[in-house]
Image (cartoon, rainbow, N blue to C red; front, top):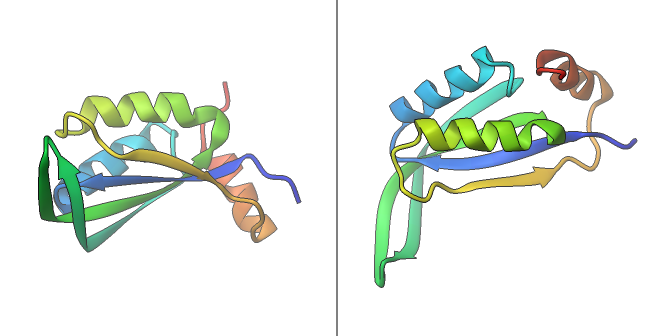
Length: 108
């Protein structure tokens, strides 16, 4: 079952910022759903230092053709200089759920 659906991961400093970004994406029909997962611990290298920070993770369900618009909007709303915004294809899924993603997102 080929699908245009993707999942986009975005880390945010906290659940409040995640909810703000998620609501904006759903209101603009750039995402069908944004799940805010609190309690993520990210360990990474930034500007030559090892960082260990509490964050939240956004799990965004949308369509591949909307990725660039979604990426641009997240970048506008996000407080990080270089936010993590990565997309993964959904290779298969429950057909009614995939249909819902399609119906719930903008068609240009």
